[in-house]
Amino acid sequence: MKPTAPIKEAPFGTPEPSGQDRLVEAAQAGDRDAFDELVRATYADTYTLAYRLTGDEEDARDVVQEAYLRAYRGLKRFRGDAQFSTWLYRITANCASTLLARRTRHRHEELNDDAVVADGRPEIDPESMAEAQLLRDRVSDALHDLPPGLRAVVVLRDVYDLPHEAIATELGISEAAAKVRLHRARKKLRERLFPIPGEETAHAV
Amino acid sequence: MPSDRVLSCADVAELLPGIVDGSASADLATRRHVEGCLRCQAELVQHRRLLKTLHHLRTEVLEPAPGLLTEILASIEAAGERGAVRSLLSGRRGAYLGGLAAATAAGAAAGAIVLANRARKRVRLAS
Image (cartoon, rainbow over all chains, first blue to last red; front, side, top):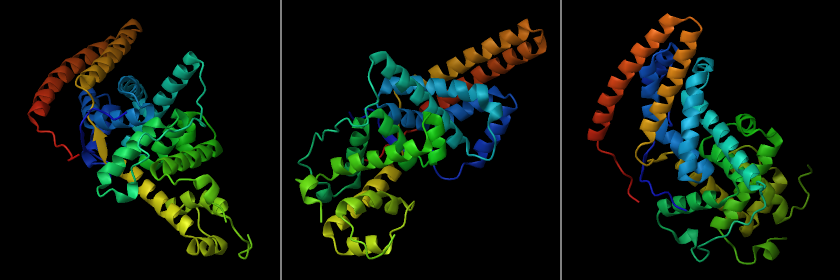
């Protein structure tokens, strides 16, 4: 599934603007205007992460709302040694993990990491794609089709650059499990994006 | 590991993602294998392209459907009100009145900024 929403450049992702630091300090001191301003500055970015983690627009909205509520209630616990955006990513990841786990229990399904990722467009050869945007679209699609447990780890590590330790903490898994999932997710993505006919038998010396 | 060991492509394939992201380094045996194996070279390039593309996704922001910002701010407002009521019930009346004043000011500021945001032209990436 492709997101229907348009895409724009990230508001941040490079070093945090100093103005944001001041807003965080003011919000921590109880200034609601400052917190609202932080929400305005970051909510689309937070939504993007939530969407990439859940793969569903409605779920992403729920996750974002919950994440900001938790951030609001826990703002005094935020320390300046981490970027606010990173702190918010961790909360968002935790909220998404909780939602997906609840949903999985409800449906009596497992977070099946071995689920087959079908390639809907196997005839397309990525090597021949002239535009990187096409590859990004395919990667987005492939991420969407990954099992949630694998998707969360690869999104948090390879897109949002969170450390393994933080990922493991927020997803409630061990660091070793996070690394295994990352490895499996990357393997599935590569196989999906760069399919090689008969790879299973030919790829041996 | 001894550097003269013979590696299979399957052995090397396990190492390639880590080599690409810098979390692992290629020992001599691995380097020798990749230098002489077009298949593994291709796979290495594919992992590089994949990782680069994943990194680039970080620069893209999906625009949520309208209304999300209002919903977030309203839920925080409600949470703030609940907190203020708890403060009132626990005897901290000053905190409650202060919260009300802040909420009123926040509402006015939110309205002004929403109007300002509406006037701002969104830039879309070429798709």
